[in-house]
Image (cartoon, rainbow, N blue to C red; front, side, top):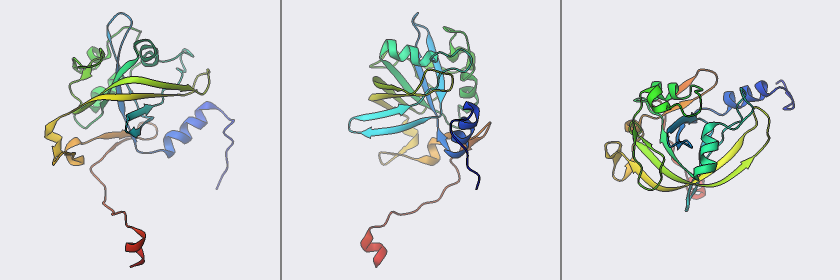
Length: 208
């Protein structure tokens, strides 16, 4: 087994992260620009934090091209809100287009062919093509550096959840119907159509 120092180049560290932490769910974050136009961007450093209150987190990095925060971060810090949408087999090609680095103010919804719809408690738009949408209020941000590749952790409290009833059964989201898509290393993407079930046993069950 070979050992690497993490004090090396940003690109090496990044490759270890995206090649090891797989598959990664994709948060498609929609925000509002300063002129009221829409912004949409996917982030695969994304997870749940808390159920009560309902908190999610994603981790954007400083742009390598400009050394600045991404537009999504700027918008969240100003507007104090955002929407988390989800990447599925029905929208992933257009979500990929939304990752294109565009000039500030150019609408990624229009560029990618995705559809913005009004939210109920925040001003940022929801993504029609996403079967689940979380309307979020900004909670916290931790920054871990100011150079290209440095990441931040942004948390949001989910104030309203929208779920397409067609992907639910008995009050639960069905994986086969959601058809979520995740990210891997390089250009790798993952479907969720190959999996197995395993029951978590109690100590008594195991000993028996």
